[in-house]
Image 1 (cartoon, rainbow, N blue to C red):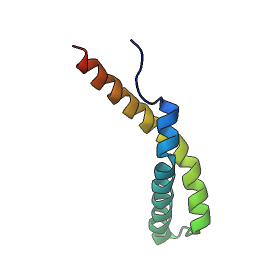
Image 2 (image 1 turned 120 degrees about the horizontal axis):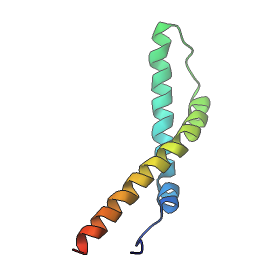
Image 3 (image 1 turned 90 degrees about the horizontal axis):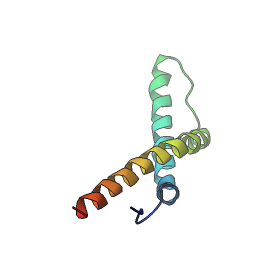
Image 4 (image 1 turned 135 degrees about the vertical axis):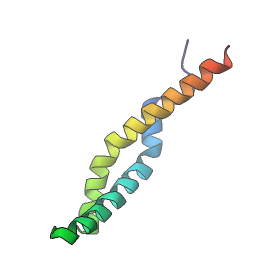
Length: 79
């Protein structure tokens, strides 16, 4: 059986801007909540940088899940 469609790497590259953006927003809001107990509020630039770092493995993991769902859907078509 050969895989059809996009590879995990291609899916990761296509979805990375969304994953990094979502991670950056989550980091920024987590810093705001942490500031309620005395923590520092992160700048937007630092939040974006951390989001870019966290976004890569998160997007890769999500792309693996999407690729698995594509494989399951393709296997169901062949029955």
